[in-house]
Length: 129
Image 1: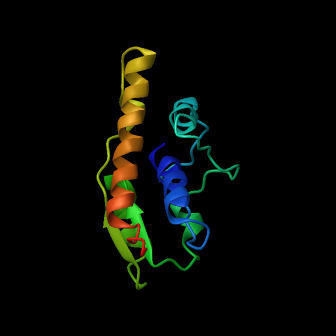
Image 2: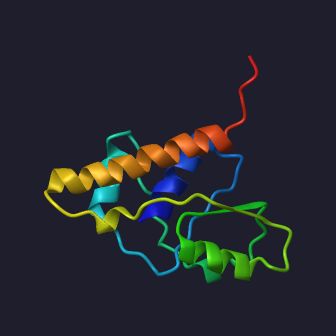
């Protein structure tokens, strides 16, 4: 559930001239908590189906950002012969949150906000003005 949030936030922050795609270690399913926390920011997931890392293997990327140890290991393995920068941004898995609906939403919001800060600080170029 982390990568679809990151993809949506990156698309919004980086604009249409940067190609952004997300993939997971395991095929994902639609998560209503993801939809809820993105909607709070006026955003929505794309209608594309979730992809696996292996499905992106033939695409040419400059940068791969991984959010879990499993994804990082798999990305390094897939890109070992390519000139791709692979960065690891350790992020908690909000699907592991327990408690009330509000407590679970809080975990998703914290993930969304953490990813948004990382994208802004690490990927968005300062605007000239």
